[in-house]
Image 1: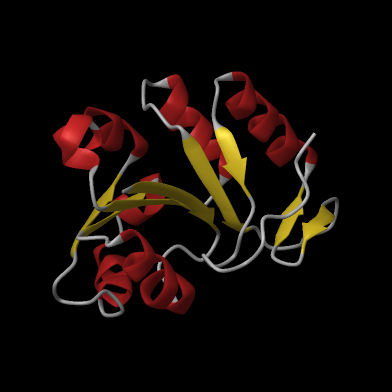
Image 2: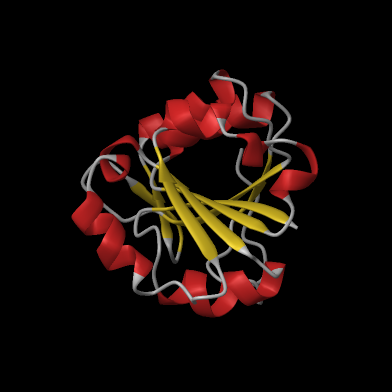
Length: 153
């Protein structure tokens, strides 16, 4: 399974303990420009990843050119983004997504609480509408066994 998730926290317990086994991930790829340049943060995040799971930290430009993002290479891959904007940039540059799991976007001033783990600001809402317009299905769940939340409109 190829699973794409947006989560401010990127790699953490819910991802490693719930999503990796749920999709049978053999690879975790993080698409984030800042993290792609920060080897120390990559090392810290890698400590949480099981040894049997490969990982890569790529900029958005690297990600869309990476051969692992096409065809059968995507199988058993968990692709993580920290923001809706990064997902949109990747899609605009040619990444094809069928489903986006919106797992965790922290609350901040100017955002409205959409679900227990997702708060959306105007930029997030605009981004999600854009993705829906590109045929991307939105899946609002924190962990796999959560019920799907209210549809985004």
